[in-house]
Amino acid sequence: MKKETTYLWWQTGVVYQIYPRSYQDSNQDGLGDLAGIIQRLDYLSGTLGVDAIWLSPFYPSPMADFGYDVADYENVDPMFGSLEDFDRLVAEAHRRNLRLIIDFVPNHTSDQHPWFLESRSSRDNPKRDWYFWRDAKPDGSLPNNWLSLFGGKAWEYDEKTRQYYLHIFLKEQPDLNWRNPEVKAAMLGALRFWMERGVDGFRLDVAHFIMKDPELRDNPPNPDIANAEFTAGEYPSQLHIHDIAHPDVHKVFREIRQLLDSYSQDQPRYSVGEIHLFDWKEWAKYYGEKLDELHMPFNFAFIRRTPWNPKAIRAVVEEIEKAVPPGAWPNYVMGNHDEPRLASRFGKEQVRVAAMLLLTLRGTPTLYQGDELGMENVEIPLDKQKDPFGLRVPGSGRDLCRTPMQWTGAENAGFSSAGVETWLPVSPKYKAENVAVELQDPSSVLNLYRRLLALRKTTPALNRGSYRTTGETTDECLSFIREAEGRTILITLNFTGKEVLPHTAMSGKGDILLSTRLDLTGTVSLNTLALRPHEGLILELEA
Ligand code: NOJ
Image 1 (cartoon, rainbow, N blue to C red):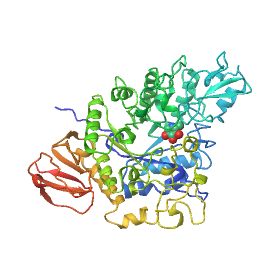
Image 2: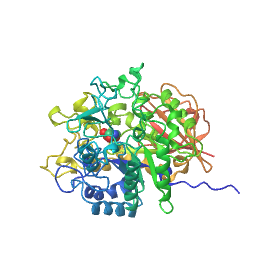
Image 3: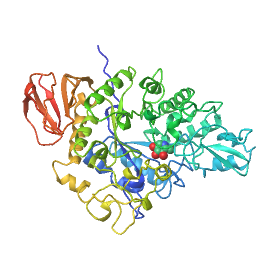
Image 4: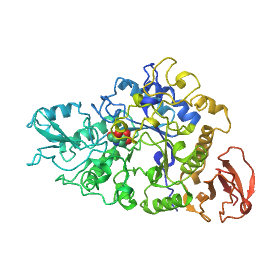
């Protein structure tokens, strides 16, 4: 008898990222908080219909990098609430069958973390080696040529102990030394702490940065700067082969996986790594040779790498399909709290095609808050900008996608009460683009997301089925088939502003399950099928 494959929640489900500062302000201080998120769980599980939420950091932090500078891995910053609020969030999420993934920041702490304060206090402090402290070179120059991703050099001089410490991000974010067994034990302890509080998984911030060359050798120059992932500032001038992703990182991930597995008997836990790699063979190694490392490395192919056209998209999806090891699970991401909004990258009309693509490909989709409304980048005047990256490296600002969530047409968009000054300004478009208005409009982007999520949830072919491209991929259209349990679903997408014939190479009839315009049903003949401008269709093929 054929063994039934069982699928886990993080495989068949859809993840939704929340940036807690900007989701819902429950105490009118202009900042979102955990109690606010709890108020919105019915929206997430009921109205929208996602399966899991990932929270960006809510830990105590001086907020130099808005929480990615953690001062205590086992607590909640008072601006977001308390551990009691967190426990309530876990319970309320689980009551609605929503899983909770939290951000974990392993590469660096805050410079205000007690570990770093101890470490910097003297050269012989027992925690000195928890971070990277080095002398200047004999000629007085920096210990090596490494650069900070956020601009400038990666070394900061400390007057008191007359050595430099390493920070790949801000100088307020010193890098932890994971080769020190005490560091590893402390960090694994923090993972345990949250699993015991009930979290279902972790998103590991810049996961592969945690292991560096043991000799901290200089990086070589980059001969191909134009193709570097981060193109702003000095950072792309080097090949980052010694400061990140030393192969020893795989051993650490195996240990993390073992720990997660030891907590997975009754509650399958999950890990996803923020790993910006585009050599898919290299990228796939993070699943582990025996699928014993991360459950998934995030796949950022659709962020900055792939031009928005059918041929490029087809090529990348097929590469991913080939690269994902047997038994491992793919995933796709289009937006997050570091990236320009989908509507601003692909255009207001293509946003619907993007939604349909993301929610019909094989693998776990991760959505970013507000993209379900079709939100665009919000231009923030310089005197109101907050992101340290943007303030240091012009053109890299991330405030534009971090503005408050738009719930209603009331002043402050229902994020904060009227009269409150929100931490970043609310988009000027909030009156037309908000949850309340879009729920009333049967053809809104929000209603498209709701329909796509519902269809994905109830259609095994979409949430677990096989993938294959079909027909001719032109400059205009991409079509593919998802299949499971004897049902065949055709997805066909028009990337242009004109009516086109998709050339799906399919004949017979198809039942329209969904159009990105939300206005079509019925049965069509596949060889005469035409797509309207910027339209995507999901059809079930007649058996
Ligand atoms: C990646 C995070 O997504 C980003 O927001 C943060 O600034 C850096 N890592 C540093 O932690």
